[in-house]
Image (cartoon, rainbow, N blue to C red; front, side, top):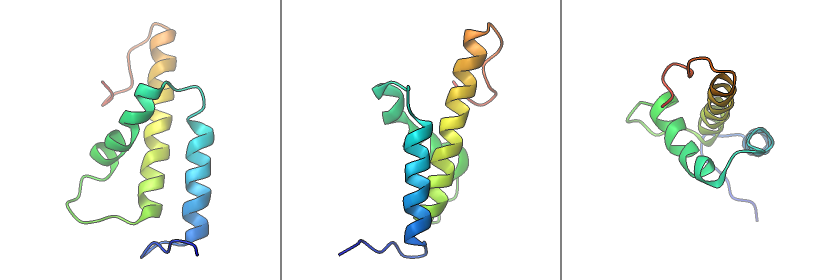
Length: 84
């Protein structure tokens, strides 16, 4: 029996998580552990609960930010604003 997530389309959530996993390839375990916290702090600053679909979008955005920050650092440029 599949788990039903209130307020979310299960297929949308599955696709979002799969996309996030693909995007996260090459990141270290330490970085992967931080991503959910970064996603929430950066993109979901409300005290209201979010849907699973909203969280997967925030997670994908955090992964993209991490890759952009690493690329900027490797090129000798400044880190992406808001990423420490």
